[in-house]
Length: 134
Image (cartoon, rainbow, N blue to C red):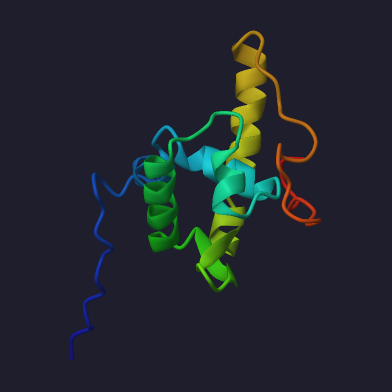
């Protein structure tokens, strides 16, 4: 009797964990969206108003990609017109350690960089930022 073959996930470049992670969040904007969600931003407008001012077309694209990758989930908070609040899944929250490491490296090796403190620029209606990058 032969064992059933297990299917390997389809890797974009290789099964290397670094390459595969970068395939999900290695672009210029995705980790900044995750950072802002960790800090308490939740709506499209709040995410768009981050310090880096992500262009709207790119933000919409990244939110779709992050949701498809299982890193974020959306839920409607308004019906007419439908508007969504975004939140990190467990898989997305697990990126907080990665972001902390990037902050440590950046503040050590890139003169003048800082770790953002406090709530996001436009915090969401009384919600506290998620534990992570406060």
